[in-house]
Image (cartoon, rainbow over all chains, first blue to last red; front, top):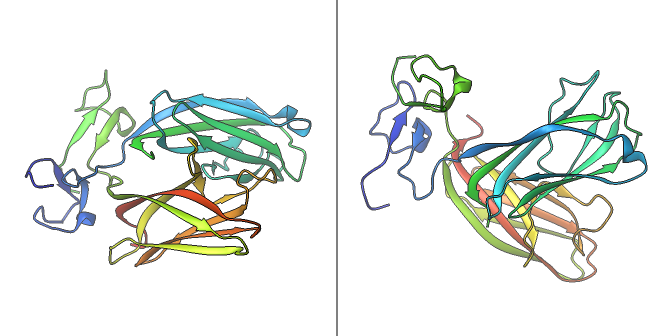
Length: 140
Length: 132
């Protein structure tokens, strides 16, 4: 960027004249930007039907372009402290501790669509709690 | 920590008394600083079951990163690592892994080798250091 404008905030003990971007908690001088995140949809889905059918969850973001995204989830019950990063296609354990659900997220310009497949075990206590985050930065 | 920096509260909260969750931005915490967004394509050829694509990120340390993949011409993207759930999303690719070191971001595609297939890749490289 040729123009000398923007905002930069150093980490404690670092000099504001540093040219190392790692020394800053915020730095807007780059030709891109800091990653801007919005909280997306959150809620629960009952995967009780998974043993018989594929199930899907659709979370609308409405940006009109394909954004950066993250998707997290956990099951109610004994393993409710296991919060999984399931942004990538993943197999996660259910409340009994068994790998029971295969999670397959894909994003387009309108929706994040998460498809759930039955994995090795039949899910027990099937309520999946989820949180989604969308970035204002475009993938495409 | 000394008392300096910038913070911005969410609507309806007083920035002087807001908790961290009531702030939309606080320079007390590091932010993900985007160095580069890369668009590229990689082709796995007929008869090849394993190909690794590398991209030199130009930093002298191991940076944070994120990768996404799509079929060429499709309008839907998956996050990497990626593996097929048994329904053959891509014609030839079964497994995609990614890793990074102090020089390169690498993406490895593994598949059947039954034909050519080209995929769109999107990389985000961040200034934030992973191994610090």
